[in-house]
Amino acid sequence: MSVIKRLEERYGEKVQSEVIYNNEHARVLRFYLRAEQEVKPHKSPSSVFITVLKGKLLFLVNDGKSEEMLNVGDTVFYNPQELHGFKAIEDSIVEAVITPNPSINKLNIS
Image (cartoon, rainbow, N blue to C red; front, side, top):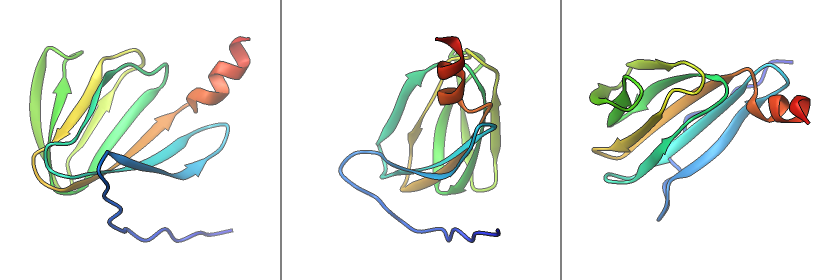
């Protein structure tokens, strides 16, 4: 069944996120950040593709060793266990595709 998910602005006092899609293969999230809000550096057991849908953000790249400014339409790819995070320069929306779904991996490990 096809599902349409319209782009909405869901900003808050803290970074907001919503699950757009979730199954055993992948998780797709949208993050809503006001200017100066950030997703702190972290690692994921999965590959992560992040696309800027609105705004301008500063992304950690090269396993956290440098930063790169990304604008609307830009995408960054992170390998599993690569340090990544981002900070909004202006009100922004990003979409993250995480594959395979990390919560499924956690279930398979135990």
